[in-house]
Length: 64
Length: 133
Image 1 (cartoon, rainbow over the protein chains, first blue to last red):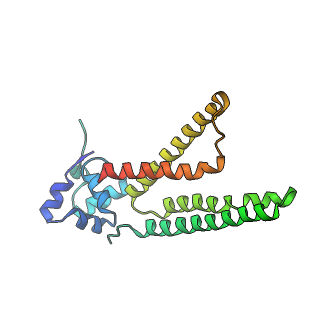
Image 2 (spheres, rainbow over the protein chains, first blue to last red):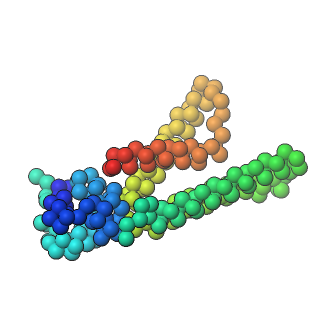
C-alpha cells in the first residue's frame, strides 16, 4: 500500500531506525511498510497515526 | 525500544538451539544403546521414540515464538518461512515416494523430514528477508 511515511519521517528528521524505535518494531519492518511491500495491521496503523498526529487515511493512500 | 535481533527471536534461537543439542545427545545415546544392548520388544518402543521428543519440543518452540513475537512483520516472515518449509518438504517427500515406488530409488528415511524442513524453511527465511532488506 502506498503511504507517506518517508515524507512524514523526513519532516521530523527521523531515520528508519528512529521510527522503528518509537514503534517498538524492527527497522526492517519500517522499511517494508514504507516501501509498500508490507501492509501493517490496523493496531500498528493506529500507532503510526498517533505518532505522526495525523489520520490514518492521510498516511496510507488507497491504490487506484 | 529497538532490538535487532529482538527479545523474542533471541529467546527462540536459544530455545531451538538447546532442543537441537538435546536431540543430538539423545540420538547418540539411543544409537549407542541399540548398538551395544540390542533392546527388542516393548523396551525398544520408548527408546526408539526418545530422539523424536526434542524435535517435538523444537516445533513447539517455533509455535511459542509466533505467540511471543510482537513485531508483526517479523512474525509474518517467520510464518511464511514455515509455510514454504512445509510445502517444499511435502513436495520433496511426495516426489521421492513415487520415485521409490516406480523407479526403485533408495528409501528416504522419514526421520530426515524434520532436518529437511529446517533446511527449506531456512532458505525461505533468507530469501524472504533479502526481499525486504
